[in-house]
Image (cartoon, rainbow, N blue to C red; front, side, top):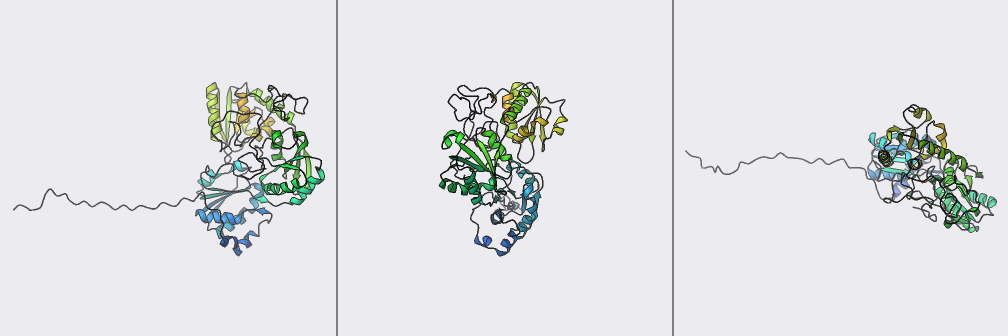
Length: 455
């Protein structure tokens, strides 16, 4: 008996059920800035904050709100040595009030914002990194994990700053006011008061830094067009408790007289810098490096000090010119470590901190150049000692288009040594993450300067 079943009808196939697993939400990089009153007025949180120095603005409420908003559970904290003593208190606060399950304290040395260590934080599985004490050199959209920068603004006696300037510099017509990021608020507060005394006050800016902010490697170059009167009638008042950052400003502006105001001592100091000695030393290192055939290129691995973009640029130049080179990775560059390779390397280029070469270059047996100096040694830039047509070697006398007749910089060895390592409009050799496309190399020009408006 034949079956009446329709053999042409396809058999029913049972498909396996696939359930989509919802991925773990990624912590947000950008959140709205309004801090809720429930955080601002939390009495327990405010009691914990009172354990920290009242004159240090560690922005705890903002940090708690950012942690909660991003949903971060694993937090990394990075602080410079002077603030590490507060790291455990911060860890306790964020664990108790922000819902953090794991808090990591990055204990490696932190010299500046260039040392932001998002890579180590990522390796630890952190959802968020909070970096204290420095400004945002590496943009938050360039870090491997969400990053929050806390400047740690320090409250100082602004009235004493104003009165000290009035008593000591009342014969000056124009003042350039700058300092480190911790005192940026004090600088802005002092400006209108000083202007009310009849002084012309100029707060320079080298973007992407904040108005008035100076780094040890990046400082604005003051143009005679940016101030009232002449450069010879203008002085710099630099607010800082040390002179490292001021030295960068003086290198960039050798024609300006510089005073340092110590906000803790309440005193004004006249500071000087051996421009001629520094430039002669660096010129000698460059000229020795011009004879090199075997090069060593050091990429700094301390945080983000070493920029791979500069390394790629230097590698391309080495290949084009037929030089032999070796790439080294170092977190700390020291004469002892470099000396281990002295038989194989004729000259070095370090992509870490330009001040390492400027301040300590003489301690190394072989030339240790910055990327800017390497451009000169490789023949792609003229040295600052090469006289510029129509001016005295490109000096900073304020007579950019006139013949100079006897200013203090009238020497072919006293041309422009740029301090623009992170400047947005700096040379192609610099480490800025915010460059506006490819630009021709520019020398003896003013940095991007504002009238003091914040970024």
